[in-house]
Amino acid sequence: MKKYATILFLALLSFASCVDEDEYPNSPQGNFEALWRIIDEHYCFFGYKQAEYGLDWDEVHHRYAKQIDEGMTTKQQFEVLTNMLAELRDGHVNLYTTFDVGRYWAWHEDYPSNLSDTLLYIYMGTDYHIATGLRYRILDDNIGYVRCATFSNDFGAGNLDEILTLLAPCKGLIIDLRDNSGGLVTSAEELAARFTNEKILVGYMQHKTGTAHDAFSPLEEQWLKPARGVRWQKRTVVLTNRSVFSAANEFVKYMKCCPNVTIVGDRTGGGAGLPFSSELPNGWSVRFSACPMYDKEKNNTEFGIAPHHSVSLQDSDFQKGKDTIIEYARQLLGN
Image (cartoon, rainbow, N blue to C red; front, side, top):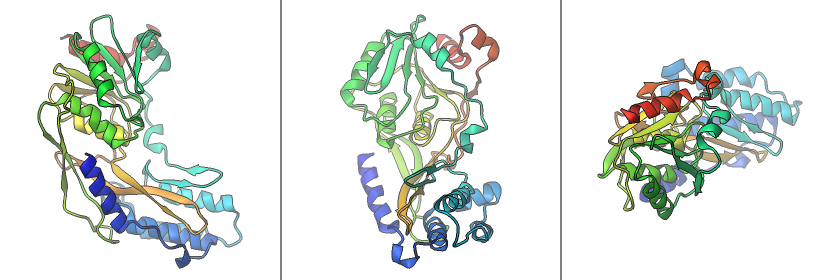
């Protein structure tokens, strides 16, 4: 993945340099046109989203241009530009200013959370182990449990060796990924590499080769190589909800290709485009999806990955102090 990340970085530099601020004035109209053009030339999901829900970026320009007025305030500009970006329905698209961050959160807001901190406390207690951001313990039925809430950390080979060695006597393993909004793709690969003994194809990616909406490189294979350290050989269940996003979404994609792995919970949130940033004439920064990613069947995972078993938290279980999704995973591993 390090070689792949380096190649990707060089590819991004070749096509996604910032729009020159001199091309547009620092005015409401200039900022609007610069933002629309940056997205028009470099965003990677136009074809997919036109097919999914009829997105027409030219029509979006026509509609929002009417809302731009040279007498509008800075915050009025921000509102219009943020609303325009929301037409992309992409959690990786953000507008950064000194006073706010424009974001699109509807990708998970309309779904049940399927996670309770109260229930997690019941299962984790206070005597769990912590290593490089991972919390882990052995449950009372001899099933290992790892809470992975972020991929923002570099886990480290030694740390993962220690975790898996401690959990080795367990008859199965649960990795609770719920509400993991992502982080480093390299960390997602680092953890997933502990669950395969051979090099496996996990998906594909592309990068933009020009400004046209359909200007992409050929599909490039993504391979997951087994880690050199301790590798897990028993059954594993990965728990997901709609707030599993970006690098965590990629982790689910990888794990679906690994042997003895089952995905349980809700559909993930997606975020399958690697993000890149550019700048508007007024200094605001925009982040957007620049490189599309696909699963091994060449399906786009921008709108999430379905679990093997769809399971939601039940109120009746909550009243008993039970997490329906964890209990389902324990039943699978117990059998």
